[in-house]
Amino acid sequence: MKFTNAITSLFFLFAATMFSLVAAAPLARLQSRDVYTPPVLYPHAGTVWKVGARHNVTWDNSDPPVNITNPIGQILLRKGDFTLDGPLASGFNLTAGRVEVTVPHVKPGHDYVIVLFGDSGDWSHKFTITH
Ligand SMILES: *[C@@H]1O[C@H](CO)[C@@H](O)[C@H](O)[C@H]1NC(C)=O
Ligand SMILES: *[C@@H]1O[C@H](CO)[C@@H](O)[C@H](O)[C@H]1NC(C)=O
Ligand SMILES: *[C@@H]1O[C@H](CO)[C@@H](O)[C@H](O)[C@H]1NC(C)=O
Image (cartoon, helix red, strand yellow):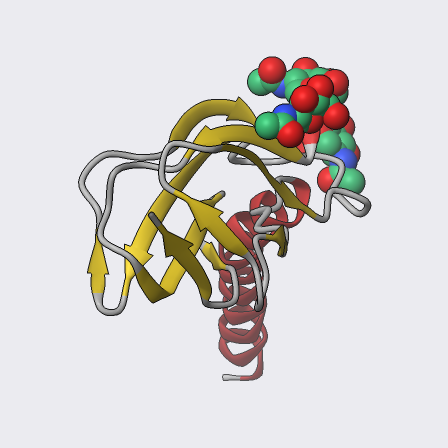
């Protein structure tokens, strides 16, 4: 009886160890390759863009993780609740901290937002586009 208990508890110890090893594996992967969503610096609140003009969208690239899962960026333009078709820029290096865009022919508004991907997408403040 005592012997059986010892075997049983050894088995559970073994099973628990295996389980925690398996459970820890995905976590270790996440830590070694970080999702990088740097904050947008420009455009910001108070920025006014004219249709057709070229501007550098900039973001804070001062603190990138060592291993970035998503080094290639994409920039979308939103107005209110709508995202405009087609990215303003894509395929650029997120570590660069800036990318040049041309303001597309959209209607004037004060509720435009730049979304920078990365992974989850980082939103700029609302800014204005005029004609
Ligand atoms: C970055 O990735 C390399 C190679 O996969 C790895 O050796 C290193 O530990 C990782 N660094 C960090 C801080 O996660
Ligand atoms: C964007 O930044 C680059 C590097 O600083 C500069 O050469 C370029 O003229 C800028 N573009 C605009 C539209 O300001
Ligand atoms: C992005 O730029 C950094 C720094 O210049 C460079 O080390 C890295 O290889 C580049 N990544 C890609 C995917 O071009």
